[in-house]
Image (cartoon, rainbow over all chains, first blue to last red; front, side):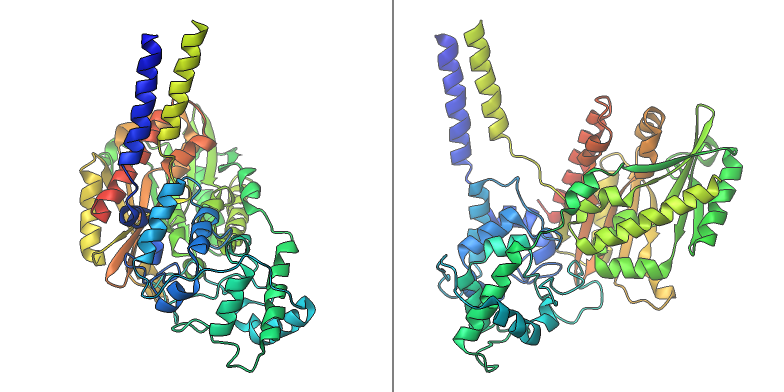
Length: 348
Length: 151
């Protein structure tokens, strides 16, 4: 009986401590959102959340669902680990930037003609949002790179967007536009309300198209690409340098793993790293997503362990899921092929 | 005894439910300081946790040499010799992930830091003996990000 009381007391204490420690929206925003959206919601990698026209046109529910579901393949992660109270606290913090009453929208579908909507979409929307609603390129780019606008045209075919935005919200955005962004009111462009309904019904039809699940593909990849070398360590190092150069890269530093952590004479000579790069590819990668610095510079490790020489590199395709960026997924596949070619040439 | 076990199980489950789950994706932080100051603070935050900074990869300089525009951009590598020795002997396939690194780049008058979650390495290398090291790295890099954020 005593044990039961003690246990109940502990459980009650745990619940009480959670109630008392109400989530701090500003702190949660700073930890989870500010790196992309800016400390004051003025944007960066992500949408400028404090933009008055953005605040005026989105509902709280749109924000909640966006935080929970993210935008698969478009950088914004799904914050599945946040509790409902934490999400609410972040939404309340974001709303501290709103100057006007918060919009609410009906969840009723808008009826329209999707085939006519498709025609109008091609004419009025595709130049910014992509022919199939895939959004503007360079979604992960920050102001650290040349960039013209504070906001990227969102991917309207994204499952996270479609689950977060109601038809009524999409319609309101088309009718009113968003001041301070290239999104104009399409009523001022000569469209009628019926035309806008048709575009909304076409955008909603994107839900029926199958979405590629890149995350599951990445999970099947091994984290490291390894090849056995029939050569001794030093010959393999030279082979790697040659293979790097013959594959349109240039090799840079060659150092041991323990470089910088130990006196040079004490470093383990059996763990050698060859760094290499292709500056044009580097520029292209950073133009897609500046966070890919995690992979920089390219490197191949040559290890002699228990009498066996192996060459290895991390497998970019196994790690691409971390970035939640479809453009980076493609880059990582290419990089993986480059690594395999170099490893195989070096151990031929 | 069976009843006791049931209550203990309930208690453990309640504890797990009360513990906040960790975030997914990448570890990121926005620092409200310009790049040079943030870079100095980052090196200090890393060193104060017992790590040796082994190298600073200059990325923007390499881009600029080829006339590509970029703001300040570095990759900071760091490690602890004994940990690196132990882990590379135990699991050589972890070497491509070593030393640890944090990417740092300017965004106007602010600075952004990015790192991967070391705990994700446990999914790739499930050896229980390695887990305490991954957990320690996760804790340290999270603390570095928090310190840089001013928390």
